[in-house]
Length: 170
Image (cartoon, rainbow, N blue to C red; front, side, top):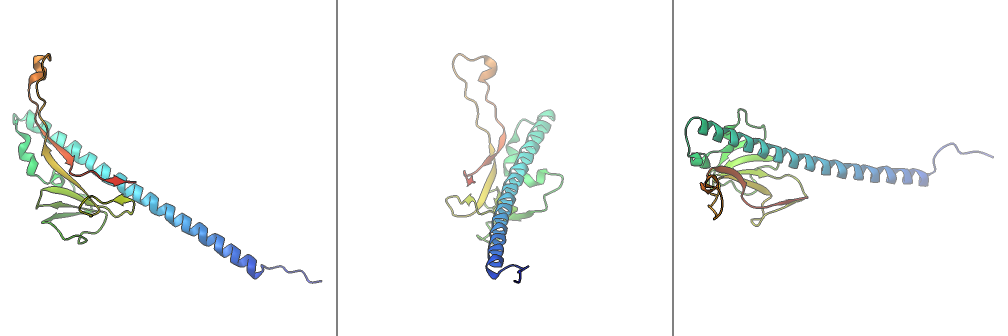
């Protein structure tokens, strides 16, 4: 009797199919983690811009300037010491699809900071574009209410970096 020391063709095909399936699952997981990292990086940039805005407001208050409304028309990326490598600059209403995913730009048309999403788990907003838009807006004044202390009755105004339209990502 001869004993076979190799794989049969069937065993080889089963091994190839299993390895291929594991490879597909691995690539899908890696794409998911990459998209989660993209979302975290976008949120981190917005957090940095909001912190920078607070510092600019504090600087203005310390220098005796009370009106922060001048910041409303500013490009938030100009507040940073160094712009991120995925910032493409200022554009005037770029055509859909002209800005690659994973990049920022400032839209001069409506004074919004835009992040173009590259991931596939993002639900596009009403215009159908895979974008997240932020805008520097005046903060709401606090209206005085009856029965509150005098210190609570003053209107507090400022500016915020606000989300223009809600989005769903994951």
